[in-house]
Image 1 (tube, one colour):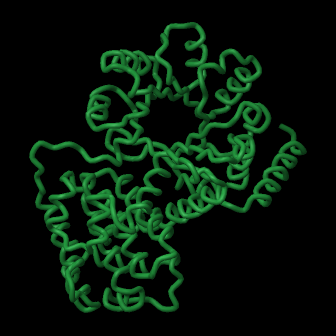
Image 2 (image 1 turned 90 degrees about the horizontal axis):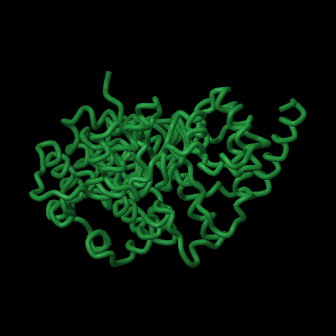
Image 3 (image 1 turned 90 degrees about the vertical axis):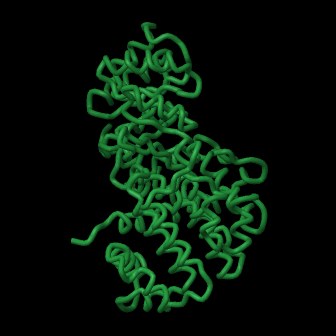
Length: 421
């Protein structure tokens, strides 16, 4: 692409970006490796009533201006672009070496597209072939595409276990990184982990594991005791300080986070008591809960990050409620994934926690003022918008809340991962 063409593409993207000020309605979906650490994100468009081509051009704009890094956090990210944008603007993707493209097998029938993909592959662009269908791997068409790609994704929800194993082993033997997609339960995840998959992706991450006899380990019991102490009546700023005074790591994380540039405080807060007075008791309880949950090293870090995103979205969508209820909405979102974080039934866990009736009702019975808010967020996460939720106004509201929640969650999680020197 010539410099003139690049500048024209940049100008077009900037114009599209300025014409639509709302955040792009993207969903960030993690792919986790065999150690349950992040391998890459996939960015999926939430399709409402906005035209797909307009959304794709806005997607291109975040690549050109570099704001895609807000979504990727420096990790590899995969995305899909329409054919025309791949043909005309894919050089923009090459400017960001950690961006890869998702392609479909039917690309083989498009000579122009195949030639463009060959050029991109030769220049180092990571291509991911999405093999959602259950056709044969040995067809000449599929084999020609396999020669171009580094990654292949199989649909674990459509392939039987034996077929999944055969395909994974065949592709792995070709030197490809194989990803299990649509992994919707922990049983399937366990099967995939027994195979040479490079990563798994799917709804299983946010769903609790089924256990015959739940066992709360010493670490989890310790976290539950802390959460209980935080939720008990009569806990003021001094009591909050006393609760975590002997936990050096927790205090370090918390004070590091509240004093970070993200909050732009007029002065440094030197104690939990000061932070509780400045931010308010409920908010500080929520943040201490967040830091405490991060101490469970046996759970995937992306699970805690998902809980933080869900909590912050719930709080933002409750802006029409009084402050105390907004902060309760945060608690509802955070604790809605407690079952997955603790590997124990919600009923058992809530026996240890003196939560407000409105929060308990939302978590156990999907009732009360916070249940509809939590349900909205869960449908957004799953990409299952319906009815009025596909209206542009609703999409913009949810996209704004989601992007802000991602920024906040990534920032807070970065402190949750830290350890004192």
